[in-house]
Structure formats: structure tokens, C-alpha cells
Length: 313
Image (cartoon, rainbow, N blue to C red; front, side):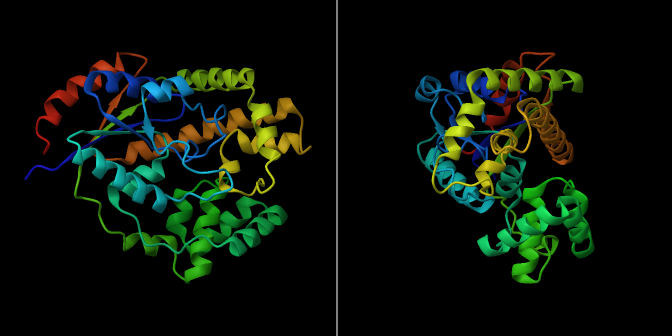
């Protein structure tokens, strides 16, 4: 029996996903849905490479600018909002196109999400204090002793994921791996999955560097400075852990000079791209396209014309 279709356009940061998504919108009239943990926040425009106001007016994206930076937004929140958006799109006889690089969001939506404990600010503050004293690699080793499978998946410098895995254990007494084993499958939809994978890797690194240069010229430092003036916002908020924001906040806080902040932001962005590519290699039934070797939108369109015909309207 055919299922209703959802098109997914994934890829590492700076791979050109937004440009291709806009071209696919023009060809198919898809409903665009952002899958990006930073684009949900208002006032975070330059450092997230958010499409400008004119582009968003012409190409509306769901799940962009839906939270203030002081607010939390979890994978569970995303799954709830995305499923409602997908249902609304299908109810109007349309097909949603999910585009972005937050792989945890894609995984949670496509494969299901465990009913994990809600975030607890007291536990997070305690973990932040431990990390400030001992370093995140030390907490990663602590996680390895509790949940070796989760530790194997998480980089020792990925503070947000280390914190969440330890938080879940401290709140529930169960490991994140145990919780995920109980995850229900999200199998009521047909996901048509495509990924932009720029090759060779050096070319992706060049694109990352150019995009960081463009952000710098556009005023990323001033944007972070403006965010720092918000009364309730601190560097501990999830929004400010986004790549670029974290490094330039630390610079403005006097931790290191601007050149060091820029170098750290570049290194962190490359690390993010590496993690995204690692996740994409493990994803099943994924059609990969090298945007440096072909017209990605045309290639994906060719695949879609036959596959969409098999979907339930």
C-alpha cells in the first residue's frame, strides 16, 4: 500500500542545500520545511546563513524564526512541529520538502524518538560547572563508563550531546542507548531521501571557509554582540552553542582575540561537517548527489518524477 511522501534534502553545512531547495520549489511547488536547530531562532540570521526576508517571502519556510534565543527547542519539539506541518501539507494535497543539516532532527523524525526525560536546568548547570572545571573530554570519559555505545557515537568535544546523554542518565537512571532501544518507528510516511555530498572533501572545506568569510563581512560579530545585550540570554543557552555564535561570544567575553575566534569557528564548522557526513554514510536508502559535478536540482528532479508517482496523494 502506498504511503504519503515526504522529500528530504540533507547534507553537510555549506553544501548548497538552500539553493537546491529553492530550485526544487520552483519545479515542484513543494512546501519547504526547515530542519535546522539554529534557524528556529529569531535574531540569529547571519551566523545561521538564514535566507533573507525577500527570499523567505518568495519561498516560505516552515519552522524558521519560531523561538527566541532564550527558549529551548528539542528534537522532540521538532518532531511534533514537523509532523503537524507535514500533515497540514498533505491535507492540502501538497508534498513537503524537508531541508537542512540537523541530522538528529532527521533521525528522530524518520526513525522515531524515545520519550526521553525533559531537560532539567539544574542538572545542566551542574554539568556545565563540571565541564568548566574538568573539560568536556573528561565528561566524555565519564559517559563512556556509563553508556559506551553513546560515547562511541559522540565526539569528545561535542558538549551539547555529551551533556544531554549524561543529563538523561542522571534524571532517569537509564542510559540514552537504553531509551533509544525503546524508540517507536516513524514508519507511517514514505521518506524520499537525498543528500548533497560535495567531493573532494577539500572543496567542501573551501566552501566552508568562503561562507565564514561572507558571514564575517556581513557582521556576525555585531550580531553576536547584539544577542549578548539580551537580558535573559547567556552563553549556556542552547542557541548560543551553535557554531560561530559560541566562538564569537567567547571572543567578545575576552577569552581570546578575533583571529583566534575566527580560527576556532572555522575548525568547529569543519568538525560539524565531518559529523554530518558520518551520519549520512550510515543512513539507508539515501540518494547522494555531488553538487560540484552535476546540476544537483536537475539530478534530484529526475529521481523524483518517477518516485513521486508511486506516492499516495
